[in-house]
Image: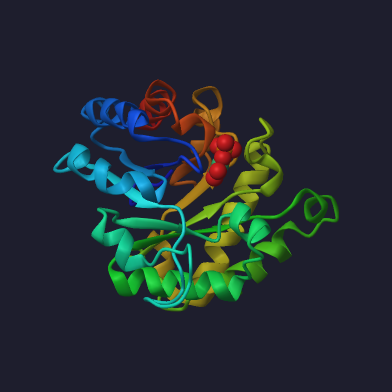
Length: 252
Ligand code: PEP
């Protein structure tokens, strides 16, 4: 954690949730009052955003999308633009999640274009990077992170428009996590690479760790230098689980 950067707990509901699931969001909004020093964000399926917006108005809980197209508009059947997300109530969007990189063959260049599109619409971009299991086993983790930062993070990134999430692919949804020491090495490397690319602007860009975060491991992960918050999938679906992590952040 860092005294300079407010802790951020971002949830990613992925392809889960229908209107009735918004009771969980309402519970998160009620619970947030207990953790005013933690910024809470929930990245919802696009279908829920406009229904969620009135639930979070003036609450200090933000809602976001999980992807946007790199173009502002046009012939892209089934896609969603950054402007559409803003219109539905989003204030941020995840770009480059490993599931998008894998399922939709997204390259780092596409991810950078999506981040730029998000900014143009007024959204913050949560840019995801992280190595696969085979890359880790080959000792390539830091090289992969460097390449993904070079390709996915536009030079205009600042603390005001960007969060970077380190999500080892092998840790997502598996219950596995890197050691705190390994997370520390990765986050120090990410901060250094961002600083080389962005200069001083990089010093306050929030760096989130993502991959099987739950309340039982949150304290250890969040105590690591340069970890400023978490991106959470499975444990964001239930308000009680998400708020239990927020409670841990609130104490650090
Ligand atoms: C994610 O989807 O970004 C994620 C980190 O998932 P989980 O917390 O379920 O591992």
